[in-house]
Structures are given as structure tokens and as C-alpha cells.
Amino acid sequence: MQYSSAIEPHRKGPSDLLKVSHDGYVRMTRYVLLKLPLIHFLSGLDEDSLHLPMHGGMESTISGYTEWLSSSVPVVSIGWDWRLNLMTGVLRYEREGWPRSNVMIIDAENGRDVGDDATAEMIALRLEHCSWEDEIRKQIAVRYA
Image (tube, rainbow, N blue to C red):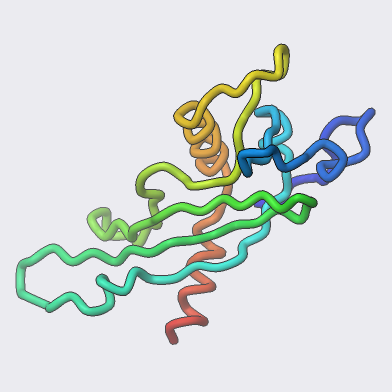
């Protein structure tokens, strides 16, 4: 999920653009969100999925969570829940629900907040184009081996 640290050629970098607002959000444009480097911080399994009783013919679920951080100051945090899709015959990690974050996307032209729902949608779209699954797979293998 890492991208080039250059946001725009005429700007220094993400740290120069990001500030924590009075409400705790780190406001940025969609463009900055797309270019902001994120580093895998932590992934884990949901506790309830570790202790489910096994019954023949019942669907079982393996699910968990993940958290990614920026290397910028202030730190941007993006986390989401995931589940393992076992129905296709190939193990596939899928994001479940909206991502959680301290980001608020602003309109590039007028600087106004686009709102929580639109921000979550934009973050989710970014995650669809990243290969986060391999990092989670590695973390789960090491952490729960």
C-alpha cells in the first residue's frame, strides 16, 4: 500500500500538508489521500471467531481487523474489519463494512468537508486498489502460528 512520498511536484511532502483539526480529524483532499503512503501496523483475528463451536454442515467465519498508519506527521490511521471468504474454493480476504479513520476528505476547490459517508467511500475505494491482503496473511501467520 505504499506510494511515492511526493504529493505534488511543487509541494514538499505529506507532512507539510497535514494538520490535526480541533475536532481530531486530519483533513486532506482526495488526491492527497490517494498518494499518502500507508504502512501495515497490526492485524489480528476476532476473538469470537477463535472460539466458535464446530458443527458439521454449519458455516464458520474467520474474521479480523487491521490497522494501517502513515509515516507522516500527524499520523493518519486507517483501520477496517475483514473476513475470509471460503466460498470460492480460494481463500480470499475481503473488507467488511466501512473503514475507520481519523481522515476527513475536503473538497479541493472550496476546502469544505465532504462528510463522513463520502470520506469512508473514498477510503474504501482506495483500499480496493491496494494489495493489503498479503500483509494481513503474513501478520496472521506469524501472530497465530
